Image (cartoon, rainbow, N blue to C red; front, side, top):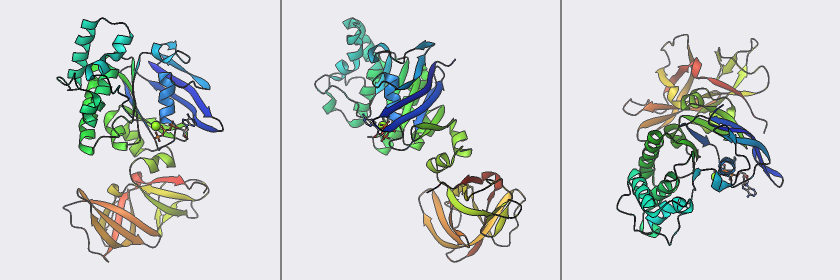
Length: 351
Ligand SMILES: Nc1ncnc2c1ncn2[C@@H]1O[C@H](COP(=O)(O)OP(=O)(O)OP(=O)(O)O)[C@@H](O)[C@H]1O
Ligand SMILES: [Mg+2]
């Protein structure tokens, strides 16, 4: 049995299902991201873990003991809310020490642990400030220190970096990850930011309408998406409508591609733009490659790469080229090639 086990968790609100049968096993010291679009049930899942929302069904086990109905204050979980929820009238030190005060820890011991926690999040010396005298990123770190100081069995972070600018967010990602690793804290990290999920966690659980659509490493999720939803939500893909020939092979833009396709019904081929290459029409490709033909519509320089839009008989697709490599001129007839193994067929969803 894993350190933290969620089994068959469900939560309904009136007629809508916020969380529908979520099961998840988290090992001690592991960081798992809950990734998914707005409204898919991430916060509700976290709140059930923290003891702030009662599940209608299912069970939560921590270190072998069932805690499904245990009150929040007995769970020893650190919860960093999206809004930080600092006490505005208390100093940074009192904010951070709050959980220890509640637990009846003595003053000198609180002072010592608060200092240690503030050093950990690199806020030493700011202990007498009020939250309003801090930047967003500093407030963020106070909230983190406050949840770390109680030495939680599990750390729950809900969109904790969403209010920071891109640069600070990046720094905080690395800081939180290294704190999490060095203390070995079991962590559930809610985000709808893919980069955050990919960089901060050991495993990612992608949620879709109250359920876990796929759980795995960043590479699993990105390279081997289990469902059309996961393929669409994580990373970018060309979604290419294809048909089936008499032998059941995929036909795309008039070319036959030997990839396994759904036995019946309409389907699309998903191909990541950065897996595609632009070649001269006459250049041959090896047997493991797919190839179609088209004409360059336009090229857009986007900083670290160039996006080339190609139009063919079956529609349009985008190829991502490294900047520095010369993009072909508009109107050029070209071939586009990519590994067959990077071609993912998914049945088209009913509208
Ligand atoms: N207290 C509540 N009463 C009624 N419906 C709720 C309540 N809390 C959440 N919901 C609904 O449950 C669903 C899941 O909400 P939840 O907050 O878990 O989503 P989320 O994945 O955290 O989304 P976001 O990324 O926007 O924060 C949503 O449809 C939401 O409207
Ligand atoms: Mg939420």
